[in-house]
Length: 511
Image (cartoon, rainbow, N blue to C red; front, top):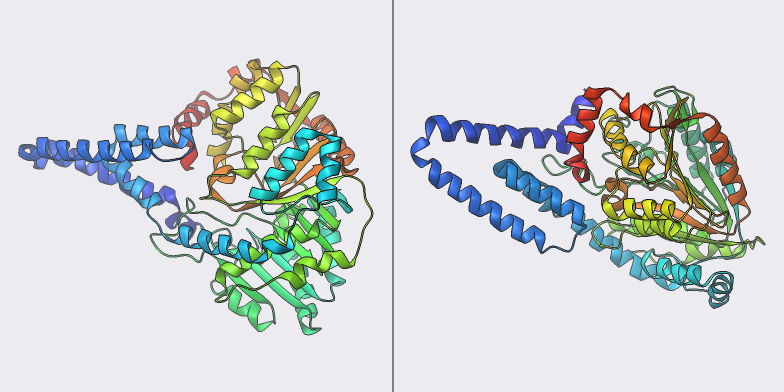
């Protein structure tokens, strides 16, 4: 029943319904209403033309435009209905407006430190300019004096999460895409949260309604409230409106007392710590920050929390809490968020910045590889300049159609000089990019359209922090457990799955 519920709320279900309507229309034209077929065809042609002209003039990424134009041109009834279904919802726009208003309220607590910006520019002028970009559009300035602990596997991060949660004295903020109420991972964390709430610690939790549709009971937030845990459900499910295409909260954030922050790919379910095997060994990554940059993640959480508050809360007390526990550390950290509907695509810009400014290497780990022309050209150009570009993908996928789609890019990328590896023990859920031992991005952002364009995401941009050595070591260790994909391997891929991948690529931005 849970899988059925998820299917009924997915854009795939409504796409199927609309496709059936298209087929019914064709049948009607040729059987029942042949006398009026010219009128009907003329109407659909005119409607398609109007929708195509409208889409061409939108400010939008080109691949999205081409996908919609193709669908509307080839199967107009389906294309127009599906376009209207995914484009006309008001919920996402309302959430985004509230989020932007919340950002404005707390922006005064995230002022740029001129000394930090000056030091970044002295290290690298391009990085100084990019730090300014992230500050203005990513919602958080650059910070020094921040210690970074990198986790190459979910199990290690989980133990530190529990330890730090147990030490909380003032507040705990948590924001997750997936929480599984039957998992040992969540059960142990929930017991800590309940205990802390009883001790008077302020505990707040946000979880995504769609991400938790099959993993949490209905009205689970009400149960948590009875435990003393304040809870918001991001974008609650509304029949015929709430689909996977709508903008979901894909972030994973924990902030404790303003002292530490956790983020990365790790959700609160047992597969993320290899307590439960779903797709072989689960390879994930994350990090813990201690110091000034914690303020960036505190602010991101409060911005999302305020979306569902009647009165926007001034979060100065929480955001500035990190200043009370000074840390001395080398390098710079820029926490940043990415939101849909603002046409900024911060996560994409960060990944491309890593590619375009690399001199020696760029290493990427991602569970999904569904890239647009701009990302492909940046990867290709980096390789053609002699940069060593390596990508690690899963060998055992969680979503077969996404895996088959990703494999359609392999041939193009390998011919461009990029090395692709598949993690043979299982599934890679890590989201990271590192270049030249100088800069790194770790967070929740996949290399696919959904993360880069449609979801609320977060990450940390790291510059010259000691943990970059650990990130590079982890990548090289993972390579040792992975199979390098060659053009000969591609020729031996199953013909049926290759066909599925190429067909799916037609609508890749909508999946």
